[in-house]
Length: 447
Image 1 (cartoon, rainbow, N blue to C red):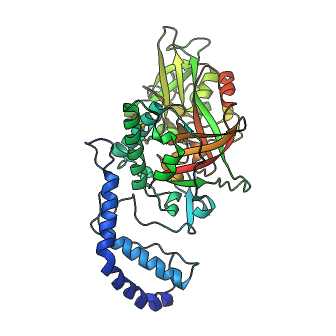
Image 2 (spheres, one colour; image 1 turned 90 degrees about the vertical axis):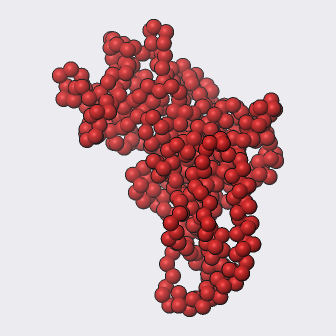
Image 3 (spheres, helix red, strand yellow; image 1 turned 45 degrees about the vertical axis):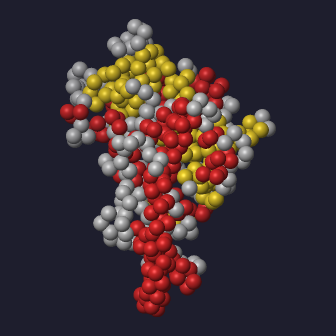
C-alpha cells in the first residue's frame, strides 16, 4: 500500500527518530532472532540436506526497521498497513516481508491470473485443537512428509510455484516456516517410531504447545454462508485392462513421446478428437504418442477424473498410471464426463503420485494422510488437522497438502481427501460414507 507524498514528508522525522532508537536495541534483537533460527535448523531432514534458504546477515536490522515502521504508522492511523520492500541481494522467496492480515490478498488461478481479493482475517484466525487424540497412520504420514520435504529440496528452485508465500503470509507464515514444520514433524515421527511408541503428534496437548494452530474458515465467493471446509474424497480405482486392444478394452491410454512435445502440438486437440483416432495408423498425428494400455470407456473416464489408476492385466501383472500433461483445455463444472474436452496424457509410475511440476518430479503419496488443495494460494506442504463429529464423538484427522487439481486453483473452501484404493465406486462410496462432508480445519505451523 502506498503512502501519499505529503504524509511521507510529515512522517520522515518520526521514522528517522524511531530508526535511531531501534538501532540501539538492534544488537540484542539480532541475538534473539539468530538463536531462534539456529534452534529451528537443529531439526533437519538429513545431514546432507541444505536448507532452501540461508540466514541473512542483514535480517535483524531489516526486521527491526519493519517493526518500527509499522508501529509508527499504526499510531498515525490504525487503518493503514505498509509493506516495506528492501532490495537486498540475498533475500529468497521464503520471505520476511510479511503483510498485515487486514491487507487484501490477491487470489490467483491456475494461469496465475487475478480472480478476487480477500483479507486474511476473513479466512484465518488463531485456534486451538480440542483434547481428542489425532488419527493417522504414523508410517504413511512420515512417508508423505519426507517426500514433500524432499520435493522442496530437489525441485524448489525449478518450481517457483511452491515458493509463493500465498495467503498465509497474512498470518506471518513463510515458506521457511513450512520447511521448519516439516523438519520438526519428520524428526518427531522418526524418533517415536524408532522407540516403538505412539507418536507425540497424535497428542493435541503436544500440538498446542509446539505449533501455532491456525483455524481455517472457508471462504467461498459463491456461498458466503459456508463456514467449514468442504471435504471431498478421491481415490485410486482398480480396473481390468489390456496391453493390446480388444473388443472390451478399446480405449487407449496414451503417453507423449518427449521428442515431439516442443511445439505442444497436443494442446490443439480435444478429448473427442484424440479418441477419434488421430494417433492411430493413418491418423494425423500418428507416431507422436505411445499406447500404454487399453481400458473400458468407464475406466478411462475415471482415470481422467482421479488422475491415477491401477490397471490389472490378464497375465497377472499390474501398474499405476498417472496423468502427465493435459491439452490445457479447462475442465467445465457440471458438464458430463464424456462431453468434457479436457484430455490427459499418462505415464506409468511406481506409486500413487501427487503434486509435481513434471511427471518425473511428482510426490509419492499415501491414502489416509494426503489432501489435494490449492497449492498456489494455500501452499504445498501445509499440515492440516480436520475436526468433525462421528457418532456423537469429536474426531481429529491429520494429513498434508501434497496434491492438487483443477478444482483447487483457486479454492479457499475445500480439500480433497485421498481415501484409498478401491475395486469400484460401490466400495468407494461405502467407505467415504463414514467420512465428513464438512469439517473445521486447522493449519499447523511450528512455533
